[in-house]
Image (cartoon, rainbow, N blue to C red; front, side, top):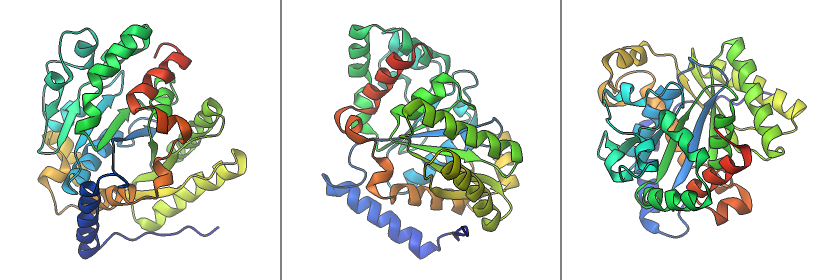
Length: 310
């Protein structure tokens, strides 16, 4: 199978797409972005740029007029706050303990972007009894009225907590780089997702730190063809981010790239990826009957009950 090489959008295309998304947001019922959409960002190994992806993808979606919340769902190495250069005093654990309301731990980092410091505080979700689960869902439900897209920056690898967040989300973006180890570990994530959910997964490939679009297409095709041959699943290629030294400099400055360096080579890539995700067919966000009956928060708690402690 010959890989499809997707060039970046030109300015007119991106502008038209932004207007279309805004029109659909106003349209109400029937719009692709009616209701909160949850997207988990996964990776097989660390160091592939997952947190940078969550931050800049969120900012790109905000540029399209969408209200974005980024949940730091890395239970061990939470660092979304560092990339934004902020020091939150509270996290979701304080909401779980009844010390704070969700509105008090939400940290605004832009007109349409907020972060929820999560980290180890999320572990407490798995220990709630049924009554406390219902109480917690009610406390967090305000998020679904105020957010168009919830991005979850998960831990690297195939730990139980990663699978829980992936299964609860409407879509998963599996991030890899051209490194052979990253490619191999990405396949391992797909395999674990299949085994956990009986082959019913909703993931798409994103290739980071590539030299050009041809390299990205070749890397994605390796993963896609292997998954189709051995797992009998079809995984779409969503897009790529070009290697960019400006991203590293942005991390050092603790200032997201899309807020500081609009001329960098990777900035258009994040915007293109955001547009493709939002404009993806409705099926890309579909999780079957359970998705229609339960919100993300309900699915998250249900998944935790199935899998046990995070």
